Amino acid sequence: MRLRRGALAAALALLLLLGPARAVEPISLGLAIAGAAASALTGFISYPRLYCYFRECCLQRHDQRAAAGLQESLDRKLFGQHLVNKVIVKAVKGFLNNTNPKKPLALSLHGWTGTGKNFVSKIIAESIYKKGLKSKYVHQFVATLHFPHADSISLYKDQLQSWIRGNVSICPRSLFIFDEMDKMHAGLIDSIKPFLDYYELLNGVSYRKAIFIFLSNAGAEKITEVALDFWRKGRTREDIQLTDMQNALSVSVFNNKNSGFWHSTLIDRNLIDYFVPFLPLEYKHVKMCVRVEIESRGYAVDEDILTRIADEMTYFPREERIYSDKGCKTVYAKLDYYYDF
Image 1 (cartoon, one colour):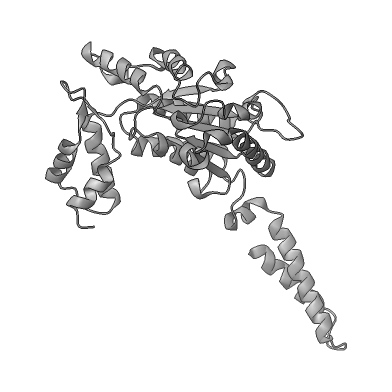
Image 2 (cartoon, helix red, strand yellow; image 1 turned 30 degrees about the horizontal axis):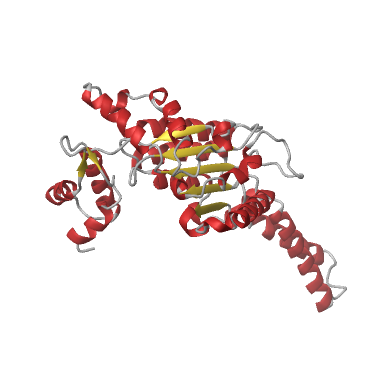
């Protein structure tokens, strides 16, 4: 705004230098002021930061700031997922700070419903773009909604390729989220294989700064198996390392006939950078979810209600009752019942 005022002031000062001996015609004054305004607007647009303050832009947030925001949000809002926190921050931060990546970032998030997969993808989107999932540079696909018919796979492949190609051409840092990969028709996701590969350009377009996130329940049994094994041996969940399950998880997903990744070339060609396991949530994590949700709604925490909600959740295995079978997914609905919001 200071730039615009400066340009207008300069134009008016120039007119005053002409002196009183010569009157200025109204149309000449109008043109002068219009010219100054146009000059100011040109200067205004030439400053990308200032322009992007008012309009959403591709690559809107500085990459280091985005990475710091991601870390802070995961630390405050994600519970019981030490592997997710570590892997996601490391992968996304490293990718955003790399000025010359060799391929797009591809993350595959796996675990039971309610363990935080959608929540983490939302946090990633918000760390890069202020509007998060509502950003025009963030694109969500839900298998059962966008690709419902098995006999239309060829059409879906063409549409998907066209959508990705067009949007990355507009914004290199486009973010694509594929939900319900376990319900996607086998073979469909392989249509995006060229976009995830190590090509410098494809038909004049570089996809190397794009981010692809896949969400799936596939592999959740394997994750639970490892977590239970640690528990039964008296070891804490924090002792679990990514190496304890990543290879087994990728093989499990690859061979799962009910998964959209069944025998997928994305796995076969090692184009998925990280298979991220979401551990099943325990009783204490459910209570954390309830507490944060109550506080986020601006209400004082009633410990009795908090405990009742956590107790009402169902847990597995039946004998030990360690893990919530819905994670934190139904916490929000139960809160509406207990609190008069």
